[in-house]
Amino acid sequence: GQNIDQPTEMTATEGAIVQINCTYQTSGFNGLFWYQQHAGEAPTFLSYNVLDGLEEKGRFSSFLSRSKGYSYLLLKELQMKDSASYLCAVRDGDYKLSFGAGTTVTVRA
Amino acid sequence: IAGITQAPTSQILAAGRRMTLRCTQDMRHNAMYWYRQDLGLGLRLIHYSNTAGTTGKGEVPDGYSVSRANTDDFPLTLASAVPSQTSVYFCASTLDRGPFYEQYFGPGTRLTVT
Image (cartoon, rainbow over all chains, first blue to last red; front, side, top):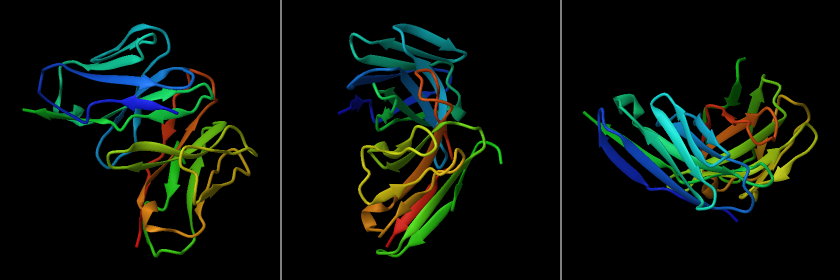
């Protein structure tokens, strides 16, 4: 089975940095994804890690440590539009995705 | 059509009724998926199809069935709806089942079973 844990909620101020942690235990590993989901909308792809290390994409970065079963998503220079739910998902040995419950980030002015 | 479409957008259904949720993609993606999303539980895989003509069971398949007659369409059927199937349903697709390919999600169907 799959076990993916991430915090339920986080709050930060506009312009600040927030780090969302994700720990996982899965049967097989073929990559870790981060998705963003605004309220009432579909998830949209943010980042993908399959090797250890940091992937940077503009204001968003994602880190992976396979030996520790750990990833984080770093959001820099927070904007009000970043208020959303962030989903950590692990692709297993059969290429299916298992999702964490999501972290709701609220950005305050 | 551009991307993935789902129909209906929302539906209120009486318990015991049969319902088919429709999903169509025009990206020629091989793999398609159905998820349900419930508060506090995240997205859970119901059924999937790696290619036209094949289907598989996900984490929560009971009470649901799917078919994949062609590449573009992947309908989800609730044979006899129950209140616990009240949820938001998302269809997704990916080009192939290889490691890099991201999943693209449809806009979702909000289903209420009374």
